Amino acid sequence: MSTLISNIGSLVTNDPALGEGPLGLLADAAVVVDGDRVAWVGPGPAAPAADEAVDAGGRALLPGFVDSHAHLVFAGDRTAEFNARMSGLAYGAGGIRTTVAATRAASDAELNANLTRYLAEMLRQGTTTVEVKSGYGLSTADEARSLRIAAGHTEETTYLGAHVVAPEYADDPAGYVELVTGEMLAACAPYARWVDVFCERGAFDGDQARAVLTAGLAQGLQPRVHANQLGHGPGVQLAVELGAASADHCTHLTDADVAALAGSTTVATLLPGAEFSTRAPYPDARRLLDAGAAVALSTDCNPGSSFTSSMPFCVAVAVREMGMTPDEAVHAATAGGALALRRTDVGRIAPGARADLHLLDAPSHVHLAYRPGVPLTAAVWQGGVRKV
Ligand code: NIG
Ligand code: FE
Image 1: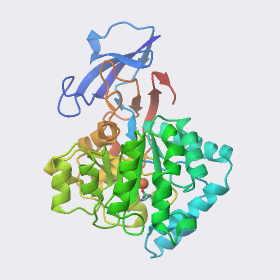
Image 2: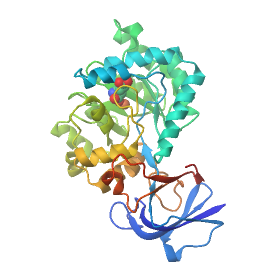
Image 3: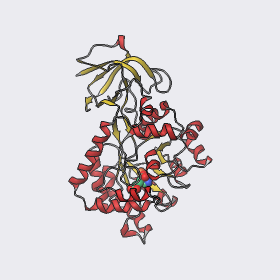
Image 4: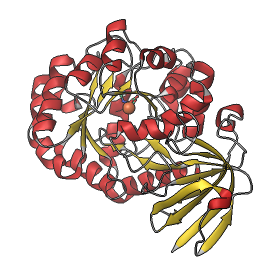
């Protein structure tokens, strides 16, 4: 079954060989989808025939967003904590334990229903690939079931047993690291592609983070790191040293951190929802881009520091507050996310790529930043199937 999407006013391919600039922009374009893949991309008049046709009405088509950082297996919310913060209280990692208690008390069905709901929310806003972390279980059984539930929805599952020290180990952090790198890892590895650690004061220090990541690597999990969110620290350097796919947050960076990222294959994943929702200064995307680092944008969707599922929101904030151009922000939210997940089949619209497509009710991708807060998603295809 093939579909011709014609009359695309502006097409973001993210393939410089197919169009203009880093976004590979094409005007008056067409795309042919065959099964779950893109079969053809080019100028409208040259398009081959297909089984069915969709008229894009001169609007913009871009790759589905790739949200490479989200914490979606949890129960409850933290409205009271958010309210207190907006009255002046500071954000700290301690709030994570509130969600751990609610998550442990929830049934599998409840956790699965919550995850399903947030993924549907994301799809309605154009997100077609989502990474999902554990990290609100913090026991062997609760981390393993979090990942088992996540694996039912996405290939991009991340073991984050090292989110904070579990309450049972408050007086024995070394014992908790032993659990996370031993029994818990063994139970979680079958359901996970990635291993992550919250490397931060109040969570895990550089030595503990290294132990977690190298243990994960030994079990075949690839590293990614929560790094330099709340202050300076060793997270970014550790991520680069271990060849992590991504260093996430990157809010507090030294010149050496920026240089290390720029000279590496580690993507700097920026999460503006977290700074928005914790009233913290935003990361400096301009500084990273000017140094030559690869940048991704993601929601960090979680009930504590960033309860947004909206990539369009992140794009708009990144443009307004982080020194990114609309082109750079859209690239970071699509191709950047794909790079942060080391995926070549998503984040671009080119022959052979997965047919994950996002049609906007707007003539240009720039409207994602130009019209903040406006629901612009007109249609979404995921693996060639029309979902929205
Ligand atoms: O990415 N930084 C650590 N983890 C989350 C926050 C989780 C929470 O507060 O529940 C984050 O911001
Ligand atoms: Fe996070």
